[in-house]
Length: 322
Image (cartoon, rainbow, N blue to C red; front, side):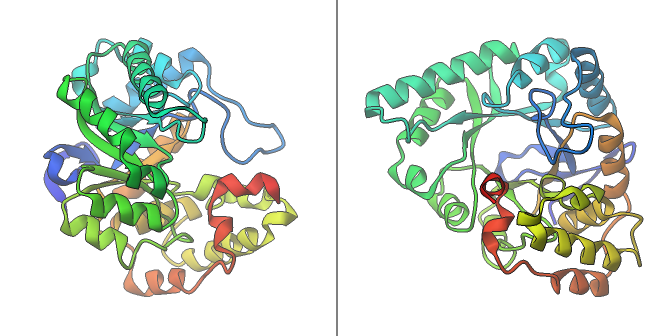
């Protein structure tokens, strides 16, 4: 396992693949500080105020979290991080994303220009000279295979604007393509108690090739929290799967989120689990859950017995169409 004996407070650290960076097991996904995100409840979706976002970011660093993941597409997230943490830039690993623009009808030259401009905008917004992990946002298999976006990221790397390169990928084919490509130091994937499609092949291969793995969607956009009860009838299969898991994990865990984080972090192929939240208490709980260690083999087997027959449900981008 890429787990280091290094420890700060309640935080363990793992090696982020061949980058040599040691990252906290829990990292902060900064989408919610920049835009509304998640499953709406009776009170709707709210993003934190600027003051609350600043407090969250500083608290994350104070807890030992040393990786913050954002994106140009996350509303005001980059700008808020830049304003909040400009005096603490040396304390954390900064990961952000640039869109590939492959679906915008641009020529290759126009596409690469748009990518360059996006990177420069991110650097200004984040008030930094270098991005530690520069990722292609929502990289499809075609985008990865064609390589134009990668070449522009490599240019940024050669110019000293990016230290390491990565891709955020969906499904199974795109993650496998990124792993086999050999140019990506880090991949960011969806992985959780219901979406286990990468367990058998992709994650072990990434581990073998020393590619860092950042996991998003640990809670499946709120499905693996008590908010599953608010899912609409079009997502009834997800709602029922979450209900079954909630009953199963009670033998060892106080909640679905606890089981979700412990399940993901028990996988030795994982470098860090992202917590996409705008609320300090959620971040604190995730750190606490991570410190409780692995689940029993019996509980993991029971969790794996719960399946979702319609795999498209595991992609939140499809939910609005149901």
